[in-house]
Length: 188
Image (cartoon, rainbow, N blue to C red; front, side, top):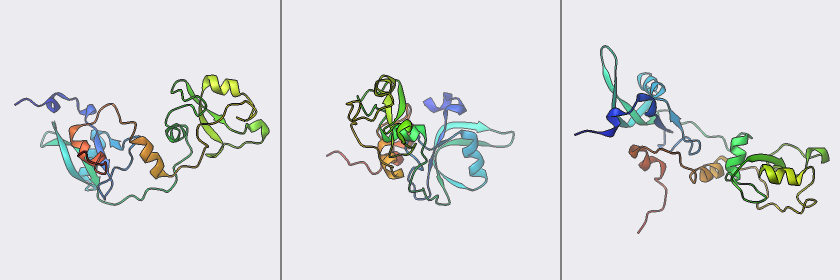
């Protein structure tokens, strides 16, 4: 019987990476390794293969099915707080302008402008669409009569993981579902 994995190019066969406790290292961006990195980790005995694609790669002396889900043998302790990056900021704010809610043309805005002594910190920067950012200008939200939907906070990694679950990647291989959504409430 023909299986769709058999015609996949190896580059479209990434491996979902789980921590040693079999939870994803990250939900968004999803912790994926290219097939070459996954195969190398298998041969270096750093991971266990949990599931595989039907697609095989061949060397002159061996053939191996590409891993689709792998688990690290050593637990990697996640840090409590994520790095302050543009991507993490957008994820915290759910990829929406904190003034109007638009998901388009996103940038970031200092709640208290730098010209008024505002700093570039989790607690003073929000996601804003370009039109709202331009409209607010160098004023505070109160001065511009533009209230924030949610006050900015320093998120934990757990909070970002929860937000990330709402933004699944374009492709989820069948073998990944049990590992990504094992803690989702079951339907009756």
